[in-house]
Amino acid sequence: MIKVYDGKAVIVDPGQGSGRHKDLKREMRKLSLEIHAQLTTHGHADHVKVAPKIEAPLFAHRFEFSIVESPLNREILTFGSKAPRGFLVSQFEGEVKVHGIFEWNDVIFGLKAIKLNGHSPGMTGFLDEENAVIYAGDSFFGERVLQAVGIPYLVEPELFKDSIKQLQYYVDEGLLLIPSHGKAVKGEEARKLLDFNIKRIEETERRILELLKKPMSLDELAYRLSKYFNVSPTPQMLALNLVPLRAFMAKLYNEGKVEAFLDNGLKWKIRGD
Ligand SMILES: [Zn+2]
Image (cartoon, rainbow, N blue to C red):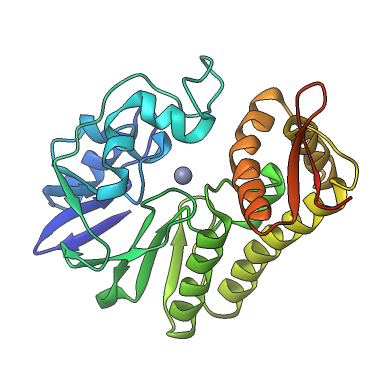
């Protein structure tokens, strides 16, 4: 996504793809715009991969700084440690240099950095008041994406929900939301989609508690949830689902709703059963 600021282009989430940096540069040349800066909503590989190929400084939120920079940190965030080669869809080896960091509520290049974390620690939306738009990154997902993955990728379900509530406020203000994975939405359509995201979180939680009436490992739980959401699981998808699932378990554990015990490995069950 492109924001024109002071007669120059600011790229939001440079993205990935072999020809993407060339396409971006060509488009900017057509518009006679010089690329002045790059901003990223968060450090996931698919959002920053081509950044080093574009000759403009890259800015990230303070919490995302080392995730953008280090290939190992990117894998830790989406797998839990070094990941098997080819296991993560957008995995790539290279380092990505970050030239500057920002804080939430900073205004940079005419865009206000909005706290929308939960999907990642420093996930940031960019509010473009002039055009009544928010670049929402991965703070919510399109319906098709949710149906394909079952459990939305997140590292903190409560923060993810809070971010969606924040977005609901902007929808009421009449803003257009542009997610990274899904189409831009506003008004009633946006409200419905945000609601669908919240419902999927709540349904995941309810289903975990239902399934854990029978004690099981997280791997089995991930598998059963994928079946429940009608997803055809692959090893890669289940490995990715384990990250948000662990975050759900932390929440339910802290609320005293589940407990952990050993029975041929680590198992979980609902508390007091
Ligand atoms: Zn992401």
